[in-house]
Structures are given as structure tokens and as C-alpha cells.
Image (tube, rainbow, N blue to C red; front, side, top):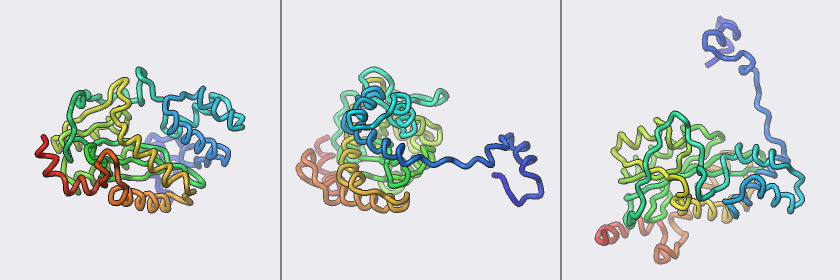
Amino acid sequence: MIDQNHDLSIGRQTELLDLSRSSIYYKPVPESERDLELMRKIDIIHLKYPYFGSRRIRDELRDQGCDIGRGHVSTLMKKMGIQAIYQKPRLSTPHPDHVIYPYLLRGLNIHRANHVWAADITYIPMARGFGYLVAIMDWATRKVLSWRLSNSLDVSFCVEALEEAIRVYGCPEIFNTDQGSQFTSESFTGILKTNQIQISMDGKGRWMDNVFIERLWRSLKYEEVYLKAYESIAVARWEIGCYFDFYNQKRRHQSLDNQTPDTVYWFRQPTLEKVA
């Protein structure tokens, strides 16, 4: 946006674009090694006890020998994009200007491929930083249809994952997410509406409705992420891609009659449809 080599001065360019001049020279300060280690520990605690808030996570960290206050824990949790899961309070913070869509899955028998898709975002620790992973999953078959890894929570990586899933696998009847601002944004919901996909969003107390993706995150982190220290986003992207290939093609699920997501998605669709 700002051209360092333009004939106009930097100051004049910022005036024309209504930007703060100081923001042009600001260089983000990387997270300290201590905070990165604390964030890794918080991620493990949150995955094990998703209902723990900042106070109980602080206590858990102190039990592990970490001298940290509740305010610092809360700050790191916000940076990671996670918060405690409760039965009544909000699961995620929606954008105040975004439309919230009704929940459509209550009492629905989901038993065939491409009936319902779901999406979620999780924090990914690395050796010298962290990233955010979004995945889109077919509900009935547990198949990971697409995913993207980003170094920010900007909506664009979610949109890219959605566009790829539709391009490769067609359209589901219903798409279910939480009320996070990435999923309520017009750029995301607009794609769903254009493709005549019904939009469903978890309401208060509905945290169990994305339980299959929560289980995916648990498997990914304990079987892959926590065993490694990715040196960069590029390395993480490659390794996570390999894991998802394994998850879809090799990892058997008891809930799928000990078959893989790929087997169920590609070869059992006629059988699933006959059950409907």
C-alpha cells in the first residue's frame, strides 16, 4: 500500500490513505521464548481441560512450576484465539456487525457424506512462533476435506479452505461452524449463500456440536504436533499435510466400523444414501 520509492513522501502517502505514520515504521516484536513455552503449555492444558478458564489454567501452570498471573494467562489465551468452553456463556466472540445464523442440526440424523460439513480453527505451536490451522471436515465420514495454515487469524485462509473444499468435493447441504468472526464474515458466508448451502451456527451451550473436529485436533496434536518443533510455517504445513493424508487414508476409526475416512467417503456413499 505504501510505496517507499514513490515520488510522494511517506508522510504525504499516509495522509492520503488516512494512516498513522508511526504504524508504517512499526516492527512487530516477536514473542519471548518464555511466552512461547507458556503458550505451548496452555494449549496442552486447554486441550485436556477445555472448560478451564484463565484462573484454573493459571493454577495448573503454577502446579507445573510456572510463576504467572491470571492476567498474563488471559492475554496469551486471547492471542492464541482460545477460551474456556462453558454450557451457557458464548463459545467465541462474534463480530458485532456480522449476521448470526440459526442452529440447524438439532435432532438431525447425519449419516451420509456431504450432508453436513463443519469447520473450526486451532492454535499450532512451533519452535519459534505459532500459527493457526483451519480444517473443513465431512461430519458423517470424518474426512478432512481441506485445510489451511496461517500466521494470523485473518479470514482469508478460511475462505481459501472453503473454496478448495467446494471445488474438489462439491457442496454439502449444511455447513456448521461456531460464531467466530472468521465464519460469520460476509466473505465466508457469501460463498455458502452463493452455492445455496444452508448455514448453521452453534448457539450458546452447543459446544459439543463440533466434537468431531475437537477430536481431530486432539489426534493431530498428540500424534503429530506435540512430538515435533516445527522450524517454520512451511515445515509445519508440510508435516501437517502428511498427517492429514495419514488421517484420511490410513487411520481407522471405531465409529466408522474400523474403516478409514477415505474408505467411508468414497466407497460407502451409495450404502449411506440407501439408509436415508
